[in-house]
Image 1 (cartoon, helix red, strand yellow):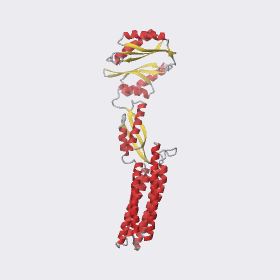
Image 2 (image 1 turned 180 degrees about the vertical axis):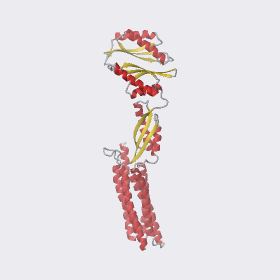
Image 3 (image 1 turned 60 degrees about the horizontal axis):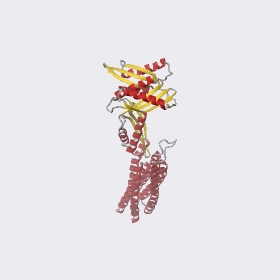
Image 4 (image 1 turned 120 degrees about the vertical axis):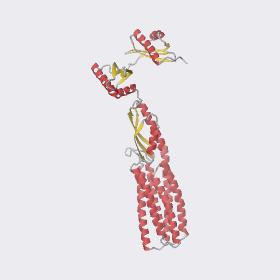
Length: 462
């Protein structure tokens, strides 16, 4: 990214530097010829080009700063320096246009003598038109690629130079045909063109400074965000343009049942989508969890518990005679008093009734939080073999088979047993769970020192 920014910055600076040399040389040529033949229109156009020289120097300096990244004092970067420089140059153009207009009207009132004609001013003006046309196209292309208002202002100046030179030629032609007012009329035309073109750029520059959303940018960002899987809707969207970067502030709704890592993934995908859509964007993304119409009762209960900071599991939900029956296992600190634990359970039950109605039947089984098991060691081989034989025996009483990968660890809290077993591929999860429960209960009855049994059921090998 840094290399890309550096490339853009050097490209804008190079175009601006070339414009300085071209502006200075053509302005000097037009001014000298205008003075020699006494043409107000040509002198006015030369002064216009001189202002362009100043504008281009400002542009050259500004583009070297505007692409610097954000810092501690400029959180949105330095892109608005280009807008400020564009306003400054526009002000210079209006001062020039006003001066030319006043002088032109004065000459028309006084019936000033026409300029002395020769081929030289026509040659200079034709060269000026060709040079300015090339520069205007190059600057316009660079401004479009980099979203640079400073370069856009410079391009507008050179485009107005082309039109101004054409107007001066028209005035000189009128003078050659005996219309003494042709040169002054051409000068008025130059002043009017400067004013009209300046007004157009001033409008877009002021809109940028006032943080007006770029045309179509909000719509593109909205479509890009809504295209991301998991986004429910867009509540608010604001876009501002600073330099070449679109800053997007979006408030987006997502399902409240999504875990944090899924929400983070949505944010990342939305950033990429908006960046691709706008060709460069800095997105501030705020998510608002909302309830969806297709949430299950179990999901809604899990949300209630999560919002209360409670650990629950084994949530069962039944509809008996049109009445909702809910059973929950609630885990609390094992050292907590029954009174405190009951108060927590009561509050959870109240929240569930608030969600589903006062006639909901809720039963909460309170149990201690599973402690962090201390560091353990593998049990002796003979102990593992003894428990493995028992596992095989209890598995034979069910539809499970091939007990393998048996591990037994000794910890201060008791023995932990892990094992794998197999079942028919068509067996339901409910049937597998019942069979495994039978094996686990048999182990804990046979070996009272076993604290926990962890099973893993698999389909047949291969």
